[in-house]
Length: 150
Image 1 (cartoon, rainbow, N blue to C red):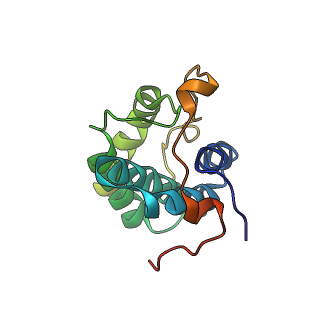
Image 2: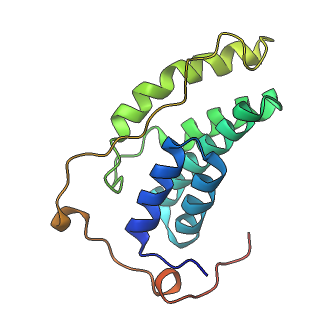
């Protein structure tokens, strides 16, 4: 079993996303989502849905799935003001704006891949120190515990 501290798992999800390995990013964030609570849980779910939307886009099918996931991710995550685990979330929202607009065009009947933005966003991190990124650990994630069933 791949057992990483939560921050390392989040950072790996960022690397997966930036490498266009959206399914893998989705899986790592989902592991964290199972442990999260409240607004942070909704925010992580939004990231998961955006990664899944890009899986649909990259595979070139399920336009309705792309539209639904990109919109639901925005509804869940856009107003989040809590800890973003070092992710420059404001920048991500700016870089997603053309994708939100593309989802509107696709919903209106445009082909999924036609006139799409040139590439999915590149996730950036804020400048951080080890002190500011210290996170509580989850014994289930770090000690090989099982993940709850989805």
